[in-house]
Image (cartoon, rainbow, N blue to C red; front, side):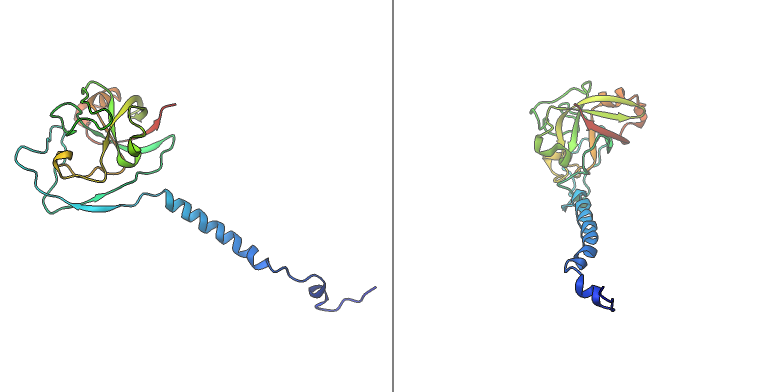
Length: 202
């Protein structure tokens, strides 16, 4: 039998060279998780400076904001990640001629009646037109409605004639026709801004 002397086990069973790596590995996992979460967030892409709309421009039929001269507006190229319950703010828009939507809808170059449940989505959710003419489910005020995506609520540009001299759209907007608000049972006096969640239809 071999007598044990201090240090012998160290010689027989040397500490593996990757032992320090084993202590660093959990920290590396945490860092990668943090970077993954960071990648899912949506940071501003820039700012644009507002200018006063020409006389008779900026239709305020639906209490739309008009750009203010010299004010800086934040722009976005992205929106929060989409899930089965994507949080958003529901706003009011008219997609009719002379409505506050400005030009015809981006998806089909058409105008749409206020009686049709149609929406525009913030730039990130619009996703370069990939949701064009598809339907989404909107949940709010204890009710649900199915609406067609027909336009982009541009988060990257604004304060010009193409955008009816309105500021860039925030990055979390579902801009909806009157029909959507009616279907959700919201009193007309409360139209204009409401927390909702939405999802793509199956």
